[in-house]
Image (tube, rainbow, N blue to C red; front, top):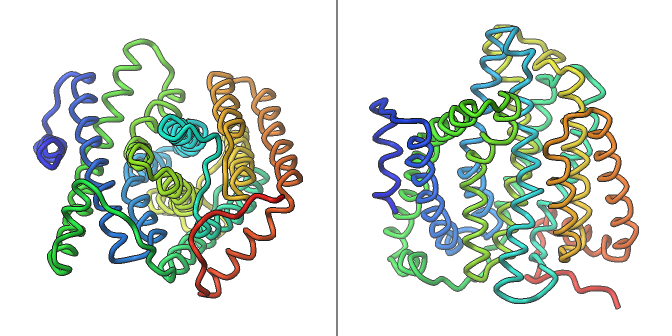
Length: 399
């Protein structure tokens, strides 16, 4: 896998390019190899740290392509007002977030159902912490469309929220895990060698992903443009499809290996860091490029961008409601996918607003239906915040 990923680094460092479609294939395969490496390192690292922190680290590395692409788009917007008017940074961010929930979450459920024939996926109690942070971030972001900027104040608050999430996740006790395959080989190494191997794999995987993400996305975009597809559509959907692939592949591999709960945990963690750190870095990159620093200034938003953020936040609220009882049913997974897929090609602004309203209504309905299970989840999250030990397993369904 390291050898398969190597062309991504070698070609990027030497500025080697071929045809756009071939570039997309070479760099895409390199990202796939890095995803395999990440999944093995993720499992082996649970011998050293808590599963929650291990998944948070892997999620952060896997989402590096999304950060790289969005930071470049925000930087270009700061340097050129014409680029800012295109709204490509927000397009990429909202597209990536909606793909994560609308495709990746249902995909993990499908793999889980295929392997087990169980119609309800239950995640561990320790995911309560991620869900609470995701809920807080969603509640904050849903009000951003009321303003005309994503500001540096948003950067301070959202990055601080991410730092708090990492801090409390790191305090969790390590849970026991059964390793198989390459991760078992890594786990059997003496502790010093095992730590070096895990860190080496993580660093190498991050390098492959970071080197391959932009040319992979560019290759896909250039291929799409040759077919006359709009730039906004390509940046919102095709580029995130490339940049989100590492985290989706890692989660899918975990699910295929019988660890669907851990795979979903990785996706929830990815959503937390995208919904906090990713959004928070956009106005920072924009302000540095523009040379303008004001706490209440930052990345400008037009009407369509505010609608896209509101729709994405509404989808996030529905996703939080789905998992507030620490389980997802087949119907809920289907609803996540169908609502995403049916609005994918719609550009009418009123239709986007109606979809956001539908997400909001479903969120309220689920919270009412699962109201008896919300208190146990919140109690578990409170105990984790206080550093108290929490038993593994899901929240029992009500009688």
